Image 1 (cartoon, one colour):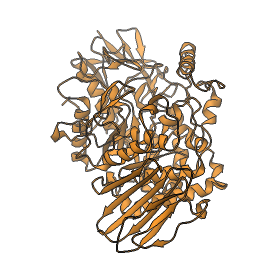
Image 2 (cartoon, helix red, strand yellow; image 1 turned 135 degrees about the horizontal axis):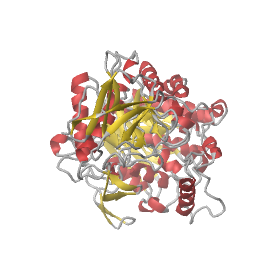
Image 3 (cartoon, one colour; image 1 turned 120 degrees about the vertical axis):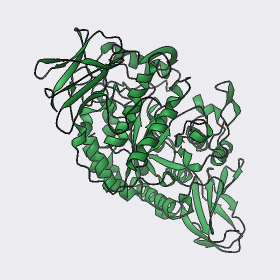
Image 4 (tube, helix red, strand yellow; image 1 turned 180 degrees about the vertical axis):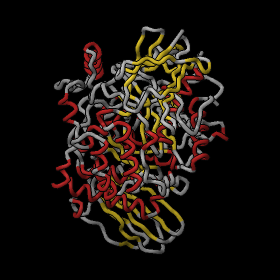
Length: 615
Protein backbone atom coordinates (compact mmCIF):
# COMPACT_ATOMS: atom_id res chain seq x y z
CA UNK A 1 0.00 0.00 0.00
CA UNK A 2 0.99 3.61 -0.47
CA UNK A 3 2.62 4.96 2.68
CA UNK A 4 -0.38 6.79 4.10
CA UNK A 5 -1.00 7.60 7.75
CA UNK A 6 -4.36 6.33 9.01
CA UNK A 7 -4.62 8.33 12.24
CA UNK A 8 -4.28 11.86 10.88
CA UNK A 9 -3.86 14.01 7.80
CA UNK A 10 -0.26 14.72 6.77
CA UNK A 11 -0.74 16.96 3.70
CA UNK A 12 -1.43 20.68 3.72
CA UNK A 13 -1.47 22.55 7.01
CA UNK A 14 -2.21 20.73 10.27
CA UNK A 15 -1.87 21.77 13.89
CA UNK A 16 -0.29 19.85 16.76
CA UNK A 17 -1.98 19.68 20.19
CA UNK A 18 0.43 22.31 21.47
CA UNK A 19 -0.49 24.74 18.70
CA UNK A 20 2.41 24.35 16.28
CA UNK A 21 1.60 24.41 12.59
CA UNK A 22 2.96 21.71 10.30
CA UNK A 23 2.92 22.39 6.56
CA UNK A 24 3.70 19.74 3.95
CA UNK A 25 3.35 19.88 0.18
CA UNK A 26 4.37 17.60 -2.68
CA UNK A 27 6.41 19.43 -5.33
CA UNK A 28 8.89 16.88 -6.74
CA UNK A 29 10.44 19.09 -9.41
CA UNK A 30 10.81 22.31 -7.40
CA UNK A 31 14.27 23.58 -6.51
CA UNK A 32 12.95 25.36 -3.44
CA UNK A 33 9.58 25.93 -1.77
CA UNK A 34 8.42 28.45 0.80
CA UNK A 35 5.19 29.39 2.50
CA UNK A 36 4.11 33.01 2.31
CA UNK A 37 1.60 34.27 4.85
CA UNK A 38 -0.53 36.67 2.83
CA UNK A 39 -2.31 37.89 5.94
CA UNK A 40 0.95 39.00 7.62
CA UNK A 41 3.52 39.33 4.81
CA UNK A 42 5.81 36.69 6.27
CA UNK A 43 7.70 34.07 4.25
CA UNK A 44 8.79 30.77 5.78
CA UNK A 45 11.23 28.48 3.94
CA UNK A 46 10.39 24.77 3.62
CA UNK A 47 12.88 21.93 3.66
CA UNK A 48 12.76 18.53 1.98
CA UNK A 49 11.82 15.84 4.49
CA UNK A 50 11.37 12.97 1.99
CA UNK A 51 11.71 12.69 -1.80
CA UNK A 52 9.43 15.24 -3.42
CA UNK A 53 7.91 16.56 -0.18
CA UNK A 54 8.62 19.92 1.44
CA UNK A 55 7.70 20.77 5.01
CA UNK A 56 8.11 23.04 7.98
CA UNK A 57 6.96 23.20 11.60
CA UNK A 58 6.37 26.69 12.95
CA UNK A 59 4.57 28.80 15.54
CA UNK A 60 4.27 31.64 13.04
CA UNK A 61 1.26 30.19 11.21
CA UNK A 62 -1.99 30.28 13.16
CA UNK A 63 -5.60 29.22 12.48
CA UNK A 64 -7.28 31.89 10.39
CA UNK A 65 -4.10 32.97 8.59
CA UNK A 66 -4.16 32.96 4.81
CA UNK A 67 -1.19 31.70 2.83
CA UNK A 68 0.22 30.48 -0.45
CA UNK A 69 3.10 28.21 -1.35
CA UNK A 70 5.87 29.73 -3.46
CA UNK A 71 7.69 27.46 -5.91
CA UNK A 72 11.23 28.39 -7.00
CA UNK A 73 10.94 31.85 -5.48
CA UNK A 74 8.43 33.15 -8.01
CA UNK A 75 5.34 30.99 -8.58
CA UNK A 76 2.73 31.63 -5.87
CA UNK A 77 -0.03 29.06 -5.65
CA UNK A 78 -2.83 28.04 -3.26
CA UNK A 79 -2.30 24.88 -1.24
CA UNK A 80 -3.36 21.75 -3.20
CA UNK A 81 -4.55 20.28 0.13
CA UNK A 82 -6.20 23.52 1.28
CA UNK A 83 -9.03 23.11 3.76
CA UNK A 84 -10.55 26.52 3.07
CA UNK A 85 -10.64 29.02 0.21
CA UNK A 86 -12.43 32.05 1.69
CA UNK A 87 -11.69 34.21 -1.37
CA UNK A 88 -12.57 31.56 -3.92
CA UNK A 89 -10.58 29.17 -6.06
CA UNK A 90 -8.04 31.79 -7.17
CA UNK A 91 -7.45 33.28 -3.74
CA UNK A 92 -5.07 32.29 -0.96
CA UNK A 93 -5.68 29.25 1.21
CA UNK A 94 -6.70 29.59 4.83
CA UNK A 95 -5.26 27.58 7.72
CA UNK A 96 -7.98 26.03 9.87
CA UNK A 97 -7.86 23.42 12.60
CA UNK A 98 -10.63 20.89 11.97
CA UNK A 99 -9.52 18.78 14.94
CA UNK A 100 -10.99 21.24 17.46
CA UNK A 101 -14.63 20.51 16.60
CA UNK A 102 -16.49 19.09 19.60
CA UNK A 103 -18.42 16.06 18.42
CA UNK A 104 -21.50 14.82 20.29
CA UNK A 105 -22.03 11.61 18.29
CA UNK A 106 -19.96 9.17 20.36
CA UNK A 107 -22.97 6.87 20.63
CA UNK A 108 -23.62 6.85 16.88
CA UNK A 109 -23.52 3.55 14.99
CA UNK A 110 -23.59 3.48 11.22
CA UNK A 111 -26.60 1.32 10.20
CA UNK A 112 -26.12 -1.96 8.38
CA UNK A 113 -25.86 -1.28 4.66
CA UNK A 114 -28.87 -3.58 4.17
CA UNK A 115 -31.00 -1.02 6.00
CA UNK A 116 -29.91 2.11 4.12
CA UNK A 117 -32.76 4.25 2.75
CA UNK A 118 -30.93 6.99 0.88
CA UNK A 119 -32.01 10.55 0.07
CA UNK A 120 -29.79 12.37 -2.43
CA UNK A 121 -29.66 16.14 -2.18
CA UNK A 122 -27.80 19.14 -3.54
CA UNK A 123 -26.85 21.61 -0.82
CA UNK A 124 -27.38 24.74 -2.90
CA UNK A 125 -30.89 23.91 -4.11
CA UNK A 126 -32.33 21.75 -1.32
CA UNK A 127 -33.27 24.78 0.77
CA UNK A 128 -33.78 28.51 0.16
CA UNK A 129 -30.61 29.16 2.19
CA UNK A 130 -28.51 26.78 0.08
CA UNK A 131 -26.26 25.92 3.04
CA UNK A 132 -25.40 23.10 5.42
CA UNK A 133 -27.29 24.99 8.12
CA UNK A 134 -30.34 25.01 5.86
CA UNK A 135 -30.12 21.21 5.54
CA UNK A 136 -29.72 20.87 9.33
CA UNK A 137 -32.98 22.76 9.86
CA UNK A 138 -34.80 20.13 7.79
CA UNK A 139 -33.32 16.98 9.31
CA UNK A 140 -36.49 16.41 11.34
CA UNK A 141 -38.45 16.55 8.09
CA UNK A 142 -36.23 13.81 6.62
CA UNK A 143 -36.72 11.70 9.74
CA UNK A 144 -40.49 12.16 9.40
CA UNK A 145 -40.27 11.10 5.74
CA UNK A 146 -38.59 7.88 6.83
CA UNK A 147 -35.16 7.86 5.19
CA UNK A 148 -32.10 7.08 7.30
CA UNK A 149 -29.21 8.27 5.12
CA UNK A 150 -28.63 11.54 3.27
CA UNK A 151 -26.31 11.58 0.29
CA UNK A 152 -24.82 15.01 -0.32
CA UNK A 153 -23.62 15.93 -3.79
CA UNK A 154 -19.94 17.04 -3.91
CA UNK A 155 -18.91 19.88 -1.62
CA UNK A 156 -15.24 20.31 -2.62
CA UNK A 157 -14.53 23.99 -3.36
CA UNK A 158 -15.62 24.99 -6.88
CA UNK A 159 -15.60 28.32 -8.76
CA UNK A 160 -18.22 30.81 -7.64
CA UNK A 161 -21.29 29.86 -5.59
CA UNK A 162 -23.37 27.80 -8.06
CA UNK A 163 -22.30 24.39 -9.26
CA UNK A 164 -23.37 20.76 -9.13
CA UNK A 165 -20.05 20.12 -7.38
CA UNK A 166 -18.34 18.00 -10.03
CA UNK A 167 -16.19 20.99 -11.05
CA UNK A 168 -14.43 21.03 -7.68
CA UNK A 169 -10.74 21.92 -7.76
CA UNK A 170 -9.79 21.65 -4.07
CA UNK A 171 -10.65 18.10 -2.95
CA UNK A 172 -9.85 18.91 0.70
CA UNK A 173 -11.62 22.28 0.98
CA UNK A 174 -15.34 22.46 1.81
CA UNK A 175 -17.29 24.92 -0.34
CA UNK A 176 -17.21 28.28 1.44
CA UNK A 177 -20.68 29.40 0.37
CA UNK A 178 -22.19 26.23 1.87
CA UNK A 179 -20.69 26.87 5.31
CA UNK A 180 -17.14 25.56 5.02
CA UNK A 181 -15.57 22.76 7.04
CA UNK A 182 -17.20 23.75 10.35
CA UNK A 183 -20.61 23.86 8.72
CA UNK A 184 -20.20 20.35 7.33
CA UNK A 185 -19.01 19.00 10.67
CA UNK A 186 -22.01 20.58 12.40
CA UNK A 187 -24.37 19.05 9.84
CA UNK A 188 -22.92 15.54 10.19
CA UNK A 189 -23.04 15.77 13.98
CA UNK A 190 -26.65 16.95 13.87
CA UNK A 191 -27.61 14.23 11.37
CA UNK A 192 -26.17 11.53 13.62
CA UNK A 193 -28.15 12.99 16.49
CA UNK A 194 -31.35 12.42 14.45
CA UNK A 195 -30.37 8.88 13.46
CA UNK A 196 -29.33 9.79 9.93
CA UNK A 197 -26.19 8.48 8.24
CA UNK A 198 -24.29 10.79 5.90
CA UNK A 199 -22.98 9.76 2.49
CA UNK A 200 -20.66 12.23 0.74
CA UNK A 201 -20.23 12.28 -3.03
CA UNK A 202 -16.54 12.61 -3.96
CA UNK A 203 -14.86 13.01 -7.33
CA UNK A 204 -11.61 11.09 -7.88
CA UNK A 205 -11.78 10.81 -11.67
CA UNK A 206 -11.02 14.41 -12.66
CA UNK A 207 -10.47 17.94 -11.37
CA UNK A 208 -12.56 20.87 -12.59
CA UNK A 209 -11.24 23.27 -15.24
CA UNK A 210 -11.20 26.60 -13.38
CA UNK A 211 -8.86 27.06 -10.44
CA UNK A 212 -7.01 23.79 -11.02
CA UNK A 213 -3.50 24.59 -9.76
CA UNK A 214 -2.30 20.99 -9.40
CA UNK A 215 -0.17 20.72 -12.59
CA UNK A 216 2.50 23.27 -11.53
CA UNK A 217 3.13 21.23 -8.38
CA UNK A 218 3.74 17.90 -10.04
CA UNK A 219 2.45 15.15 -12.35
CA UNK A 220 -1.03 14.80 -10.90
CA UNK A 221 -2.25 14.00 -14.42
CA UNK A 222 -1.13 11.62 -17.15
CA UNK A 223 -1.68 11.74 -20.91
CA UNK A 224 -1.59 7.95 -20.98
CA UNK A 225 -5.39 7.98 -20.70
CA UNK A 226 -8.05 10.52 -21.53
CA UNK A 227 -11.40 11.16 -19.85
CA UNK A 228 -14.37 13.29 -20.98
CA UNK A 229 -12.74 16.06 -18.92
CA UNK A 230 -9.20 15.79 -20.36
CA UNK A 231 -6.09 13.94 -19.18
CA UNK A 232 -6.70 11.34 -16.51
CA UNK A 233 -5.50 11.60 -12.96
CA UNK A 234 -2.17 9.83 -12.59
CA UNK A 235 -2.77 6.66 -10.61
CA UNK A 236 -0.25 4.40 -12.38
CA UNK A 237 2.31 6.50 -14.29
CA UNK A 238 5.61 7.93 -13.03
CA UNK A 239 5.31 9.60 -9.61
CA UNK A 240 1.84 8.12 -9.13
CA UNK A 241 2.48 6.96 -5.55
CA UNK A 242 2.14 10.52 -4.28
CA UNK A 243 -1.02 11.14 -6.33
CA UNK A 244 -2.54 7.99 -4.86
CA UNK A 245 -1.56 9.17 -1.39
CA UNK A 246 -3.19 12.55 -2.04
CA UNK A 247 -6.59 11.02 -2.82
CA UNK A 248 -6.47 8.25 -0.22
CA UNK A 249 -5.66 10.81 2.49
CA UNK A 250 -8.59 12.84 1.22
CA UNK A 251 -11.00 9.92 1.57
CA UNK A 252 -9.72 9.13 5.04
CA UNK A 253 -10.13 12.77 6.05
CA UNK A 254 -13.86 12.77 5.25
CA UNK A 255 -14.42 9.53 7.15
CA UNK A 256 -12.19 10.26 10.13
CA UNK A 257 -12.28 14.04 10.62
CA UNK A 258 -15.80 14.75 9.35
CA UNK A 259 -17.38 11.50 10.65
CA UNK A 260 -18.90 10.82 7.21
CA UNK A 261 -20.38 7.31 7.13
CA UNK A 262 -19.96 6.45 3.45
CA UNK A 263 -18.45 7.84 0.28
CA UNK A 264 -20.09 7.75 -3.12
CA UNK A 265 -17.29 7.70 -5.70
CA UNK A 266 -18.25 9.44 -8.93
CA UNK A 267 -17.82 7.66 -12.30
CA UNK A 268 -15.12 5.18 -11.33
CA UNK A 269 -15.09 3.89 -14.92
CA UNK A 270 -13.12 7.09 -15.64
CA UNK A 271 -10.47 6.17 -13.04
CA UNK A 272 -7.68 4.51 -15.01
CA UNK A 273 -5.19 2.31 -13.22
CA UNK A 274 -3.29 -0.57 -14.79
CA UNK A 275 -0.90 -0.89 -11.84
CA UNK A 276 -0.44 -4.01 -9.77
CA UNK A 277 -2.90 -2.77 -7.11
CA UNK A 278 -5.87 -0.76 -8.31
CA UNK A 279 -6.35 2.56 -6.50
CA UNK A 280 -9.85 1.49 -5.39
CA UNK A 281 -8.51 -1.70 -3.86
CA UNK A 282 -5.86 0.32 -2.05
CA UNK A 283 -8.53 2.73 -0.84
CA UNK A 284 -10.56 -0.20 0.49
CA UNK A 285 -7.54 -1.50 2.40
CA UNK A 286 -6.95 1.88 4.02
CA UNK A 287 -10.61 2.34 4.94
CA UNK A 288 -10.60 -1.13 6.51
CA UNK A 289 -7.51 -0.15 8.48
CA UNK A 290 -9.29 3.01 9.66
CA UNK A 291 -12.28 0.95 10.77
CA UNK A 292 -9.98 -1.40 12.69
CA UNK A 293 -8.40 1.60 14.42
CA UNK A 294 -11.59 3.51 15.28
CA UNK A 295 -14.33 0.88 15.40
CA UNK A 296 -16.47 2.96 13.02
CA UNK A 297 -17.88 1.25 9.90
CA UNK A 298 -17.59 3.05 6.59
CA UNK A 299 -19.03 2.10 3.21
CA UNK A 300 -17.73 2.79 -0.28
CA UNK A 301 -20.40 3.14 -2.96
CA UNK A 302 -19.47 3.68 -6.59
CA UNK A 303 -20.99 4.97 -9.79
CA UNK A 304 -19.95 2.93 -12.83
CA UNK A 305 -21.45 2.32 -16.26
CA UNK A 306 -19.37 -0.78 -17.01
CA UNK A 307 -21.53 -3.45 -15.31
CA UNK A 308 -18.25 -4.96 -14.14
CA UNK A 309 -18.60 -6.84 -10.87
CA UNK A 310 -14.85 -6.64 -10.23
CA UNK A 311 -15.55 -3.30 -8.60
CA UNK A 312 -17.90 -4.83 -6.02
CA UNK A 313 -16.21 -8.19 -5.55
CA UNK A 314 -14.47 -8.65 -2.23
CA UNK A 315 -10.71 -8.30 -1.86
CA UNK A 316 -10.55 -12.02 -1.08
CA UNK A 317 -12.11 -12.74 -4.49
CA UNK A 318 -9.66 -10.50 -6.36
CA UNK A 319 -12.10 -7.61 -6.51
CA UNK A 320 -11.73 -3.95 -5.61
CA UNK A 321 -13.87 -4.36 -2.48
CA UNK A 322 -16.45 -1.64 -3.05
CA UNK A 323 -19.57 -2.17 -0.94
CA UNK A 324 -22.20 -1.17 -3.50
CA UNK A 325 -22.81 0.62 -6.77
CA UNK A 326 -25.48 2.75 -8.35
CA UNK A 327 -27.49 0.68 -10.84
CA UNK A 328 -28.50 3.03 -13.64
CA UNK A 329 -29.90 0.14 -15.66
CA UNK A 330 -32.79 -0.36 -13.24
CA UNK A 331 -33.63 3.31 -13.73
CA UNK A 332 -33.41 3.11 -17.52
CA UNK A 333 -35.67 0.05 -17.72
CA UNK A 334 -38.16 1.58 -15.28
CA UNK A 335 -38.32 4.89 -17.16
CA UNK A 336 -38.96 3.16 -20.49
CA UNK A 337 -41.59 0.92 -18.87
CA UNK A 338 -43.27 4.03 -17.45
CA UNK A 339 -43.64 5.44 -20.96
CA UNK A 340 -40.41 7.42 -21.19
CA UNK A 341 -38.53 8.15 -24.38
CA UNK A 342 -36.52 5.44 -26.14
CA UNK A 343 -33.81 7.65 -27.62
CA UNK A 344 -30.16 8.03 -26.56
CA UNK A 345 -29.08 5.47 -23.99
CA UNK A 346 -32.73 4.52 -23.40
CA UNK A 347 -32.74 2.91 -26.86
CA UNK A 348 -30.96 -0.13 -25.40
CA UNK A 349 -33.89 -0.91 -23.07
CA UNK A 350 -37.14 -2.54 -24.15
CA UNK A 351 -39.20 -1.69 -21.09
CA UNK A 352 -40.93 -4.18 -18.85
CA UNK A 353 -38.96 -7.29 -19.86
CA UNK A 354 -35.70 -5.50 -19.07
CA UNK A 355 -37.21 -4.20 -15.83
CA UNK A 356 -38.04 -7.77 -14.86
CA UNK A 357 -34.48 -8.80 -15.66
CA UNK A 358 -33.10 -5.97 -13.54
CA UNK A 359 -35.23 -7.13 -10.61
CA UNK A 360 -33.72 -10.59 -11.02
CA UNK A 361 -30.13 -9.81 -12.02
CA UNK A 362 -29.56 -6.12 -11.14
CA UNK A 363 -27.80 -5.55 -14.47
CA UNK A 364 -29.81 -5.71 -17.67
CA UNK A 365 -26.64 -6.21 -19.70
CA UNK A 366 -24.71 -8.87 -17.85
CA UNK A 367 -22.80 -10.33 -20.79
CA UNK A 368 -25.01 -9.38 -23.75
CA UNK A 369 -24.42 -7.32 -26.86
CA UNK A 370 -25.40 -3.66 -26.31
CA UNK A 371 -26.33 -1.95 -29.60
CA UNK A 372 -25.34 1.56 -28.55
CA UNK A 373 -21.82 0.44 -27.64
CA UNK A 374 -21.60 -2.19 -30.37
CA UNK A 375 -20.04 -4.72 -28.02
CA UNK A 376 -20.72 -7.26 -25.28
CA UNK A 377 -21.30 -5.43 -22.00
CA UNK A 378 -21.36 -6.59 -18.41
CA UNK A 379 -20.70 -9.60 -16.23
CA UNK A 380 -22.86 -11.91 -14.13
CA UNK A 381 -24.06 -10.67 -10.73
CA UNK A 382 -24.38 -14.20 -9.34
CA UNK A 383 -23.26 -14.34 -5.70
CA UNK A 384 -23.72 -10.57 -5.29
CA UNK A 385 -26.21 -9.54 -2.62
CA UNK A 386 -29.04 -7.10 -3.19
CA UNK A 387 -27.44 -4.57 -0.83
CA UNK A 388 -24.66 -4.10 -3.41
CA UNK A 389 -26.96 -2.25 -5.81
CA UNK A 390 -28.58 1.16 -5.32
CA UNK A 391 -31.73 1.75 -7.38
CA UNK A 392 -33.86 4.82 -8.02
CA UNK A 393 -36.48 6.32 -10.30
CA UNK A 394 -34.56 9.58 -10.53
CA UNK A 395 -31.25 11.16 -9.48
CA UNK A 396 -29.28 14.30 -10.21
CA UNK A 397 -27.83 12.88 -13.45
CA UNK A 398 -30.99 11.43 -14.93
CA UNK A 399 -32.85 14.69 -14.38
CA UNK A 400 -30.11 17.26 -14.82
CA UNK A 401 -28.64 15.74 -17.97
CA UNK A 402 -31.92 16.37 -19.76
CA UNK A 403 -31.80 19.67 -21.60
CA UNK A 404 -34.75 21.11 -19.68
CA UNK A 405 -34.08 19.21 -16.46
CA UNK A 406 -37.61 17.81 -16.23
CA UNK A 407 -38.49 15.64 -13.27
CA UNK A 408 -40.94 12.71 -13.48
CA UNK A 409 -43.51 15.05 -11.91
CA UNK A 410 -43.47 16.93 -15.21
CA UNK A 411 -43.26 13.88 -17.47
CA UNK A 412 -45.59 11.19 -16.11
CA UNK A 413 -48.99 11.04 -14.45
CA UNK A 414 -49.55 11.30 -10.72
CA UNK A 415 -50.54 7.63 -10.72
CA UNK A 416 -47.32 6.66 -12.48
CA UNK A 417 -45.24 8.62 -9.96
CA UNK A 418 -46.75 6.48 -7.20
CA UNK A 419 -46.14 3.30 -9.17
CA UNK A 420 -42.50 4.20 -9.87
CA UNK A 421 -41.93 4.91 -6.18
CA UNK A 422 -43.43 1.54 -5.30
CA UNK A 423 -41.29 -0.18 -7.94
CA UNK A 424 -38.13 1.20 -6.31
CA UNK A 425 -39.08 0.64 -2.67
CA UNK A 426 -40.30 -2.93 -3.22
CA UNK A 427 -37.07 -3.97 -4.95
CA UNK A 428 -34.52 -6.31 -3.35
CA UNK A 429 -31.94 -3.51 -3.58
CA UNK A 430 -31.03 -0.34 -1.68
CA UNK A 431 -33.53 2.41 -2.60
CA UNK A 432 -32.56 6.02 -3.16
CA UNK A 433 -34.79 9.08 -3.53
CA UNK A 434 -33.81 12.38 -5.11
CA UNK A 435 -34.73 15.52 -3.21
CA UNK A 436 -38.28 16.65 -3.81
CA UNK A 437 -39.51 13.52 -5.54
CA UNK A 438 -41.47 12.62 -2.41
CA UNK A 439 -43.88 15.46 -3.10
CA UNK A 440 -43.64 15.49 -6.89
CA UNK A 441 -41.49 18.62 -7.21
CA UNK A 442 -42.30 20.51 -10.42
CA UNK A 443 -39.25 22.73 -10.65
CA UNK A 444 -36.57 21.24 -12.89
CA UNK A 445 -33.07 20.35 -11.76
CA UNK A 446 -30.95 22.08 -14.38
CA UNK A 447 -27.24 22.11 -15.05
CA UNK A 448 -25.70 25.28 -13.59
CA UNK A 449 -22.25 26.81 -13.05
CA UNK A 450 -20.79 30.15 -11.94
CA UNK A 451 -17.40 30.24 -13.62
CA UNK A 452 -15.44 33.50 -13.75
CA UNK A 453 -13.46 32.76 -16.91
CA UNK A 454 -15.47 34.23 -19.85
CA UNK A 455 -13.95 31.81 -22.35
CA UNK A 456 -14.85 28.84 -20.18
CA UNK A 457 -18.38 30.15 -19.65
CA UNK A 458 -18.87 30.41 -23.39
CA UNK A 459 -17.43 26.94 -23.93
CA UNK A 460 -19.88 25.47 -21.43
CA UNK A 461 -22.80 27.26 -23.09
CA UNK A 462 -21.73 26.07 -26.53
CA UNK A 463 -21.26 22.52 -25.28
CA UNK A 464 -24.77 22.35 -23.83
CA UNK A 465 -26.29 23.68 -27.05
CA UNK A 466 -24.38 21.19 -29.18
CA UNK A 467 -25.28 18.31 -26.88
CA UNK A 468 -29.00 18.92 -27.41
CA UNK A 469 -28.93 20.22 -30.98
CA UNK A 470 -31.20 17.41 -32.20
CA UNK A 471 -33.77 17.72 -29.42
CA UNK A 472 -36.39 20.19 -28.18
CA UNK A 473 -36.20 22.26 -31.33
CA UNK A 474 -38.68 24.80 -29.98
CA UNK A 475 -36.56 25.55 -26.89
CA UNK A 476 -33.08 26.81 -26.24
CA UNK A 477 -30.86 25.07 -23.70
CA UNK A 478 -31.05 27.07 -20.44
CA UNK A 479 -27.94 29.16 -19.85
CA UNK A 480 -25.84 27.23 -17.26
CA UNK A 481 -24.15 30.46 -16.14
CA UNK A 482 -27.36 32.41 -15.48
CA UNK A 483 -28.35 32.74 -11.83
CA UNK A 484 -31.96 32.22 -12.92
CA UNK A 485 -31.06 28.69 -14.02
CA UNK A 486 -29.84 27.97 -10.50
CA UNK A 487 -32.79 29.66 -8.78
CA UNK A 488 -35.23 27.76 -10.99
CA UNK A 489 -33.72 24.50 -9.71
CA UNK A 490 -34.49 25.15 -6.04
CA UNK A 491 -37.13 23.06 -4.32
CA UNK A 492 -40.57 24.57 -3.73
CA UNK A 493 -41.25 23.62 -0.12
CA UNK A 494 -44.61 25.41 -0.24
CA UNK A 495 -45.93 22.58 -2.43
CA UNK A 496 -46.06 20.37 0.65
CA UNK A 497 -49.08 22.37 1.82
CA UNK A 498 -51.21 21.64 -1.24
CA UNK A 499 -52.53 18.62 -3.09
CA UNK A 500 -51.63 16.42 -4.86
CA UNK A 501 -48.14 17.08 -3.44
CA UNK A 502 -49.22 16.77 0.19
CA UNK A 503 -50.86 13.41 -0.52
CA UNK A 504 -47.83 12.14 -2.44
CA UNK A 505 -45.63 12.99 0.55
CA UNK A 506 -47.92 10.94 2.84
CA UNK A 507 -47.80 8.11 0.31
CA UNK A 508 -43.98 8.11 0.33
CA UNK A 509 -44.01 8.09 4.15
CA UNK A 510 -46.27 5.05 4.07
CA UNK A 511 -44.10 3.31 1.48
CA UNK A 512 -40.93 3.89 3.49
CA UNK A 513 -42.62 2.68 6.65
CA UNK A 514 -43.80 -0.43 4.81
CA UNK A 515 -40.27 -1.01 3.56
CA UNK A 516 -38.88 -0.82 7.10
CA UNK A 517 -41.59 -2.83 8.86
CA UNK A 518 -42.06 -5.73 6.44
CA UNK A 519 -39.94 -8.28 4.65
CA UNK A 520 -39.37 -5.68 1.94
CA UNK A 521 -36.59 -4.30 4.15
CA UNK A 522 -34.46 -7.38 3.45
CA UNK A 523 -32.48 -6.84 0.21
CA UNK A 524 -32.58 -10.55 -0.59
CA UNK A 525 -32.35 -11.37 -4.29
CA UNK A 526 -32.44 -15.14 -3.71
CA UNK A 527 -35.98 -15.17 -2.31
CA UNK A 528 -37.35 -13.12 -5.20
CA UNK A 529 -39.56 -14.44 -8.00
CA UNK A 530 -40.62 -12.22 -10.90
CA UNK A 531 -43.62 -12.85 -13.13
CA UNK A 532 -43.99 -10.55 -16.13
CA UNK A 533 -46.59 -10.20 -18.88
CA UNK A 534 -45.28 -7.90 -21.59
CA UNK A 535 -48.58 -7.88 -23.50
CA UNK A 536 -50.55 -6.81 -20.43
CA UNK A 537 -47.72 -4.58 -19.13
CA UNK A 538 -47.91 -6.17 -15.69
CA UNK A 539 -45.19 -7.34 -13.36
CA UNK A 540 -45.45 -9.24 -10.08
CA UNK A 541 -42.73 -9.55 -7.45
CA UNK A 542 -42.92 -12.45 -4.98
CA UNK A 543 -40.84 -11.80 -1.87
CA UNK A 544 -40.38 -14.39 0.92
CA UNK A 545 -38.64 -14.23 4.27
CA UNK A 546 -39.15 -16.47 7.30
CA UNK A 547 -42.90 -17.15 7.53
CA UNK A 548 -44.04 -14.14 5.53
CA UNK A 549 -44.79 -13.73 1.83
CA UNK A 550 -45.40 -10.46 0.04
CA UNK A 551 -46.59 -9.95 -3.53
CA UNK A 552 -46.21 -6.63 -5.29
CA UNK A 553 -48.56 -6.38 -8.27
CA UNK A 554 -47.62 -3.65 -10.74
CA UNK A 555 -49.73 -2.51 -13.67
CA UNK A 556 -47.98 -0.12 -16.06
CA UNK A 557 -50.90 -0.11 -18.52
CA UNK A 558 -53.44 2.70 -18.82
CA UNK A 559 -56.34 0.32 -18.17
CA UNK A 560 -57.07 -2.05 -15.28
CA UNK A 561 -55.53 -5.53 -15.47
CA UNK A 562 -56.49 -8.77 -13.67
CA UNK A 563 -53.53 -10.41 -11.91
CA UNK A 564 -53.68 -13.74 -10.10
CA UNK A 565 -52.34 -13.94 -6.58
CA UNK A 566 -50.16 -16.95 -5.77
CA UNK A 567 -52.13 -19.82 -4.26
CA UNK A 568 -51.94 -20.14 -0.49
CA UNK A 569 -54.06 -21.64 2.28
CA UNK A 570 -54.13 -18.33 4.16
CA UNK A 571 -55.80 -15.09 3.21
CA UNK A 572 -53.98 -12.23 1.52
CA UNK A 573 -54.06 -8.89 3.38
CA UNK A 574 -53.81 -5.55 1.62
CA UNK A 575 -50.74 -3.62 2.81
CA UNK A 576 -50.68 -0.87 0.17
CA UNK A 577 -52.80 0.18 -2.77
CA UNK A 578 -51.56 3.20 -4.70
CA UNK A 579 -54.97 3.44 -6.43
CA UNK A 580 -56.84 3.83 -3.13
CA UNK A 581 -58.81 7.11 -2.93
CA UNK A 582 -56.79 8.01 0.18
CA UNK A 583 -53.91 8.47 -2.29
CA UNK A 584 -56.20 10.30 -4.74
CA UNK A 585 -56.66 7.10 -6.74
CA UNK A 586 -59.77 5.83 -8.56
CA UNK A 587 -60.72 2.81 -6.43
CA UNK A 588 -59.50 0.68 -3.54
CA UNK A 589 -58.85 -3.04 -3.81
CA UNK A 590 -60.24 -5.49 -1.23
CA UNK A 591 -58.73 -5.34 2.24
CA UNK A 592 -58.30 -9.10 2.17
CA UNK A 593 -58.71 -11.89 -0.37
CA UNK A 594 -58.87 -15.68 -0.29
CA UNK A 595 -55.64 -17.53 -0.85
CA UNK A 596 -56.41 -18.31 -4.48
CA UNK A 597 -57.74 -15.09 -6.00
CA UNK A 598 -57.47 -12.80 -8.97
CA UNK A 599 -57.58 -9.08 -8.34
CA UNK A 600 -57.98 -6.17 -10.73
CA UNK A 601 -55.03 -3.82 -10.46
CA UNK A 602 -55.99 -0.28 -11.41
CA UNK A 603 -54.18 1.56 -14.24
CA UNK A 604 -50.64 2.69 -13.49
CA UNK A 605 -50.70 1.42 -9.93
CA UNK A 606 -49.05 -0.95 -7.47
CA UNK A 607 -50.88 -3.26 -5.10
CA UNK A 608 -49.11 -5.02 -2.21
CA UNK A 609 -50.56 -8.03 -0.38
CA UNK A 610 -49.07 -10.07 2.46
CA UNK A 611 -49.73 -13.48 3.95
CA UNK A 612 -48.04 -15.27 6.82
CA UNK A 613 -47.82 -18.63 5.09
CA UNK A 614 -44.38 -19.44 3.74
CA UNK A 615 -45.42 -22.20 1.35
